[in-house]
Image 1 (cartoon, rainbow, N blue to C red):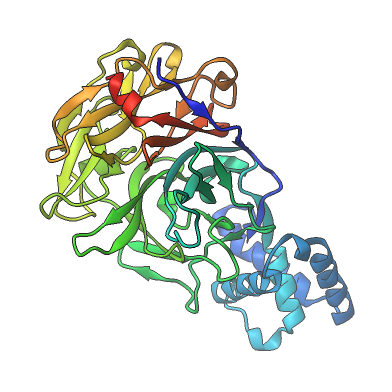
Image 2 (cartoon, rainbow, N blue to C red):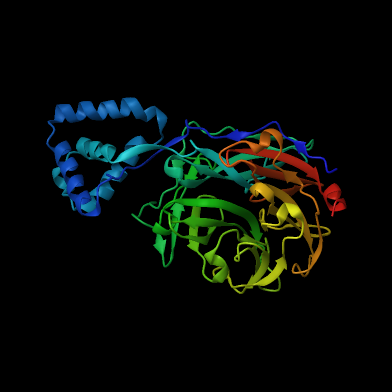
Length: 426
């Protein structure tokens, strides 16, 4: 029986984590602009004493809950000035800020759930004790309207199968498309930027395009080493518009700028792509499940286009008869590539397993677990979506696998397991 070393740390939904977001009037498309102008005119018609009093109330109620409140309100006003063709020369600064306030709202980005984590090496490994490793965990945070965003937590793994989370900053700030210019778009991708006043743990990446409108889901983040030795963090995720899904990439070299890039090709029309952390003879490789049931290995000359690929794995054991998928980027170990998988069995019960792929030719399956490594049992069955355990990626730390995983689409648990013992079960 494979032993899991469970951490006592558990991450759960947290309605106290809020950010300021644009507020859009819920009117039909024809009426919206006129209604927006009416609201602007109502603020402009206020005498200055009343306007200052209302603005003071806004700051009294909300400034302690957010960083850069004044800048956010002014930025929102500037967006409205452009969209509504307002003459800013005729509007006092206090009223500009108040107009911005009427078109913002607080959004609790993790009020419904935290789930489906992945983990990677933190870009900063300085000032650590021997054997300690700094890590960065990505999370799917779900808030009002079931909108999914990307959140982060930083932590340190020690040498005794324990880890500590770095405290979150008091306030969270949404990554923004504006960093000196109103919008940073290049061809078919958009870039968002972490606020210089925010840590990585205090940064939230929200949907910014129509294709992402209802969520950025299940980021599978990996530290990618290019052939020239340069390092980049690349993650695959699902963009959900509310009607359609597609796979996209998040690319960053410093976790200050994030490029969000749509993918093309057959495999990109579904979810669950996962990137190998290095090239193979000048070509990139992914694991995908574009038929909704089986796992494929896919090759490409560039990171932007992914075709059908080659069948890698089919469901074999009862706990995965419905479908199999990957649970994050393949992990390179001495014996080959360790690929974490998920299987869906009877009563739509999700379990996590593992596969060993050949190091030089990962299209060759060397071994696989016949029984789940982690499954939904006892208290880990209950939640928003019961009977589900799911991960978007683990990491090798010494001789162990460190595995964060989502529980019932409601919380995130953490466990260590011996890689040697895991291989022995295959």
